[in-house]
Length: 130
Image (cartoon, helix red, strand yellow):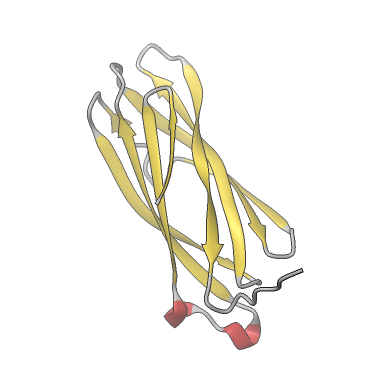
Protein backbone atom coordinates (compact mmCIF):
# COMPACT_ATOMS: atom_id res chain seq x y z
CA UNK A 1 0.00 0.00 0.00
CA UNK A 2 1.29 3.44 -0.95
CA UNK A 3 0.07 6.54 0.86
CA UNK A 4 0.39 10.33 0.72
CA UNK A 5 -1.32 13.10 2.71
CA UNK A 6 -1.81 16.61 1.35
CA UNK A 7 -3.81 19.18 3.28
CA UNK A 8 -5.57 16.48 5.35
CA UNK A 9 -6.55 14.50 2.24
CA UNK A 10 -5.09 10.98 2.42
CA UNK A 11 -4.64 9.10 -0.86
CA UNK A 12 -3.86 5.39 -0.59
CA UNK A 13 -3.11 3.17 -3.59
CA UNK A 14 -2.78 -0.59 -3.88
CA UNK A 15 -1.63 -1.88 -7.30
CA UNK A 16 -2.20 -5.48 -8.41
CA UNK A 17 -0.68 -7.22 -11.43
CA UNK A 18 -3.36 -8.91 -13.57
CA UNK A 19 -1.76 -12.06 -14.93
CA UNK A 20 -5.00 -13.23 -16.57
CA UNK A 21 -5.27 -10.05 -18.67
CA UNK A 22 -1.57 -9.80 -19.53
CA UNK A 23 0.18 -11.31 -22.54
CA UNK A 24 3.93 -11.32 -21.75
CA UNK A 25 4.78 -12.96 -25.11
CA UNK A 26 3.32 -9.86 -26.78
CA UNK A 27 4.83 -7.32 -24.34
CA UNK A 28 1.44 -6.50 -22.87
CA UNK A 29 1.20 -6.26 -19.08
CA UNK A 30 -1.86 -5.06 -17.15
CA UNK A 31 -2.31 -3.73 -13.61
CA UNK A 32 -5.33 -2.72 -11.58
CA UNK A 33 -4.97 -0.17 -8.82
CA UNK A 34 -7.37 0.49 -5.98
CA UNK A 35 -7.47 4.08 -4.75
CA UNK A 36 -8.95 5.36 -1.50
CA UNK A 37 -9.31 9.11 -0.97
CA UNK A 38 -10.08 10.17 2.61
CA UNK A 39 -11.01 13.66 3.74
CA UNK A 40 -9.53 14.00 7.21
CA UNK A 41 -9.87 17.77 7.18
CA UNK A 42 -12.59 20.13 8.34
CA UNK A 43 -13.97 21.33 4.99
CA UNK A 44 -15.97 19.69 2.20
CA UNK A 45 -14.03 19.20 -1.03
CA UNK A 46 -14.81 17.97 -4.53
CA UNK A 47 -12.42 16.08 -6.77
CA UNK A 48 -12.51 18.00 -10.06
CA UNK A 49 -9.66 16.67 -12.22
CA UNK A 50 -6.90 14.09 -12.33
CA UNK A 51 -3.42 13.96 -13.82
CA UNK A 52 -1.40 10.75 -14.09
CA UNK A 53 2.21 10.30 -15.15
CA UNK A 54 2.84 6.68 -16.12
CA UNK A 55 6.44 5.62 -16.78
CA UNK A 56 7.23 2.19 -18.18
CA UNK A 57 10.36 0.12 -17.54
CA UNK A 58 12.16 1.77 -20.47
CA UNK A 59 11.49 5.29 -19.20
CA UNK A 60 8.76 6.09 -21.72
CA UNK A 61 6.20 8.47 -20.21
CA UNK A 62 2.48 8.66 -20.83
CA UNK A 63 0.43 11.49 -19.34
CA UNK A 64 -3.30 11.16 -18.70
CA UNK A 65 -5.52 14.10 -17.79
CA UNK A 66 -9.25 14.29 -17.35
CA UNK A 67 -12.24 15.32 -15.30
CA UNK A 68 -12.92 13.37 -12.14
CA UNK A 69 -12.19 9.68 -11.72
CA UNK A 70 -14.07 6.72 -13.23
CA UNK A 71 -16.73 9.11 -14.53
CA UNK A 72 -17.35 10.77 -11.17
CA UNK A 73 -16.40 13.99 -9.41
CA UNK A 74 -16.97 12.89 -5.82
CA UNK A 75 -17.79 15.34 -3.03
CA UNK A 76 -16.17 14.45 0.29
CA UNK A 77 -17.33 15.99 3.52
CA UNK A 78 -15.15 15.87 6.63
CA UNK A 79 -14.54 12.24 7.59
CA UNK A 80 -15.84 10.85 4.30
CA UNK A 81 -13.97 8.73 1.76
CA UNK A 82 -14.29 7.57 -1.84
CA UNK A 83 -12.81 4.40 -3.34
CA UNK A 84 -12.45 3.28 -6.92
CA UNK A 85 -10.54 0.79 -9.04
CA UNK A 86 -8.93 1.53 -12.37
CA UNK A 87 -6.12 0.04 -14.41
CA UNK A 88 -3.34 0.55 -16.89
CA UNK A 89 -1.49 -1.54 -19.45
CA UNK A 90 2.23 -1.25 -20.16
CA UNK A 91 4.53 -2.66 -22.85
CA UNK A 92 7.12 -3.54 -20.18
CA UNK A 93 6.86 -5.86 -17.15
CA UNK A 94 7.35 -2.99 -14.70
CA UNK A 95 6.79 0.72 -14.33
CA UNK A 96 5.77 3.48 -11.97
CA UNK A 97 2.79 5.82 -11.65
CA UNK A 98 2.31 9.10 -9.85
CA UNK A 99 -0.05 12.01 -10.17
CA UNK A 100 -2.29 14.66 -8.66
CA UNK A 101 -5.96 15.28 -8.04
CA UNK A 102 -7.24 18.84 -8.36
CA UNK A 103 -9.71 19.50 -5.58
CA UNK A 104 -12.06 22.41 -4.92
CA UNK A 105 -13.50 23.61 -1.61
CA UNK A 106 -17.10 24.80 -1.22
CA UNK A 107 -15.69 28.34 -1.10
CA UNK A 108 -14.21 27.82 -4.59
CA UNK A 109 -10.55 27.45 -3.59
CA UNK A 110 -8.71 25.03 -5.88
CA UNK A 111 -5.74 23.01 -4.62
CA UNK A 112 -3.72 19.97 -5.67
CA UNK A 113 -3.51 16.71 -3.76
CA UNK A 114 -0.53 14.44 -4.44
CA UNK A 115 -1.09 10.85 -5.48
CA UNK A 116 1.80 8.78 -4.10
CA UNK A 117 4.24 7.30 -6.59
CA UNK A 118 3.61 3.58 -6.77
CA UNK A 119 5.45 0.73 -8.40
CA UNK A 120 3.95 -1.52 -11.06
CA UNK A 121 5.75 -4.82 -10.67
CA UNK A 122 5.13 -8.16 -12.34
CA UNK A 123 6.67 -11.60 -11.93
CA UNK A 124 7.95 -11.22 -15.50
CA UNK A 125 10.46 -8.54 -14.55
CA UNK A 126 14.00 -9.89 -14.68
CA UNK A 127 16.38 -8.68 -12.02
CA UNK A 128 19.94 -7.71 -12.83
CA UNK A 129 22.73 -7.21 -10.35
CA UNK A 130 25.34 -4.74 -11.57
